[in-house]
Image (cartoon, rainbow, N blue to C red; front, side, top):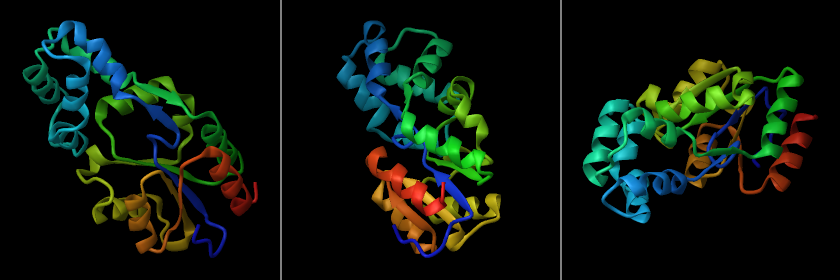
Length: 205
């Protein structure tokens, strides 16, 4: 971590930092009602430009569903697909506990995520920790994805913090590098057993 002083706010990536996720869950649910296999469905929803367009706000829920149906032959209803698409998350409990500890100390915390509308609807409804955040910057709303400069600028504008006042946690090195380039303090998250003690010490929890 490029620590220079005690940060005034903490920015959390969402997927693989606070919540684990698995698109394979969605693919296995869809397969019995589709013309292709679960592995092929996984490639459609996770490895093509479709998800990128959805997560940059360039496709509506309906347009994303229609594109997936066209590619997979899925025969289920849109509401069923979207519910399955959102319901692929599980809490990473030590990291959620870390965010709760920061909130209890009065330290502002922010979500900073490449994500989509349906995932966030499900997360807001299903995980109480999410409602504790001071604010959020989401790719589909900003129409920009990490590590693009514009979405980092949106974090600074929304939070009112910049440079070393921000501590940023993300599992993607290229995203962390973009934060460090702006003078943010940052930590590449891989293991809660390493991240939690480091942040706890830095923030004086």
